[in-house]
Length: 374
Image 1 (tube, rainbow, N blue to C red):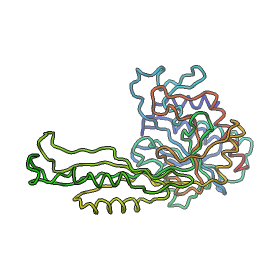
Image 2: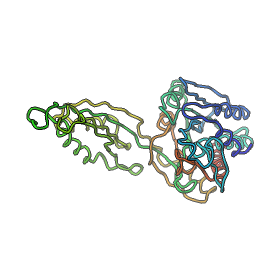
Image 3: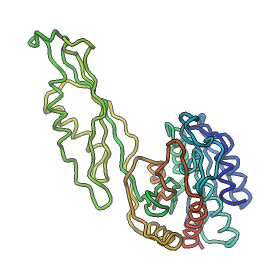
Image 4: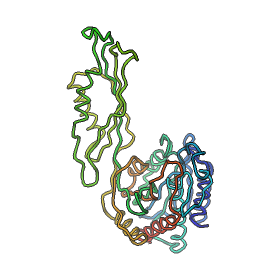
């Protein structure tokens, strides 16, 4: 079966997060046929599996997710989102780019590599989850916890997230920024707006502190990351009446931070600024993920070489974008990159990829296997 045929099999499954439908059964059957042992690790309503062939070093792991985001209004799609359709050199379907087709590329790359090198040195693995697009509580993070407890260490990890900007291979991710959110409530005293001396306006009290937070230079970044960013996303206060000073104001903010910062360093600095301004406040924190980085080295060079041979371009290293499951896997992976299709239409109506890119991406993965494992 071709990579395209396997991709279509997966894309037909309506696996809206965290429901895997039958995707992982399809994948497990293909992997068992080439000697992989499949270990199911299901938690809650999330399906995961860890497939492995061999026990020797180095261990190379492909990682990805079978879940997809909801389709939105299906009537806005040119073609049914779960009927993969070829049109004008493109493949349309929900999950075509993000990232079922990349998983199909993993599998067929492994099939060809093992057929040509049945006694290859090292070991191969696949870590697949159905909870990447959702809460991500019972997916890759739980599998990594299990693997960590038994001492499993991955030498090279390739996550199939869509990373290309304009054409396949132009960009690969060697890291991601961390994401730390704050939910700040500043307390005052409610009162009539005509008698401010009898009230305490929390909006007025918070404003200088928020201005300082917004103006603060947290760091200047480093060769791999831009400077840490602080952004306010929501401010809510007031009773709805125009003549009432409110008792509280709520502010939601987020840091996208580089490896120059830690969760602790950011929290400490924020509290110092709020305390300096004498605010009465409550602040709840939520960490979505710490930053992670694979410095330029063997894995990035192997990927760039493979992309050069298959696509004829030089791939750039990047740490932009949101978070991915790489933030969990990096805890047990020496080197990790993300490499997949063009990301221009992910999560959109009419998500699609170039048909010609499918065999190219599978060939890139196979080329990397040959360089690292043969």
